[in-house]
Amino acid sequence: MSDIPVPPRPGRGATRRRLAEMLRVDHAGELGAVYIYRGQRAVLARAPGRERIAEQLAEMESHEAVHLARFEELLTERGVRPTLLAPVWRVAGFALGAGTALLGERAAHACTEAVETVIGHHYAEQVEEVRDREPELAAQFAQFRDEELEHLDTAVAEGAREAPGYRVLSAVIQAGCRAAIRITEKV
Image (cartoon, rainbow, N blue to C red):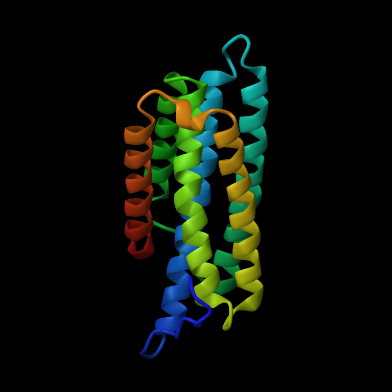
């Protein structure tokens, strides 16, 4: 990233449309994150001896729920429709969470690391894009980015990179996240 401000898109209403894309994607991403953690907890909270990770997942889910609530407010305040794919992202998030949890704690953490890596970059790009035009929104994006990166750090500390098939698992999840971002901008 550079210190050169990102210019607004050309054309009447283009800046507003771009901001709508950002808010729609961020809302959908936080929705998906809540469901990923719910899926992971559905598997790991029931397993004996997994109380610690279940508590970690519940805490991270609560952070995502706060982010989701804020984006719901922003969508309403700015008259932006949520993604039409919300039902798909709920199911996909839960399935991803449950699936990685079934592979074990480290795979669940690898999922968190992969998702938060993409989301951290995504929020950083948004901060750069809106910081001059929407400083309050940029500050909100920066706060959420920092909180997401705390989740990433926790996941790494808990052995995410030691998960079986880590490189492949991480690459697939990251590619899926990037594709979901692009799709959700428009749908």
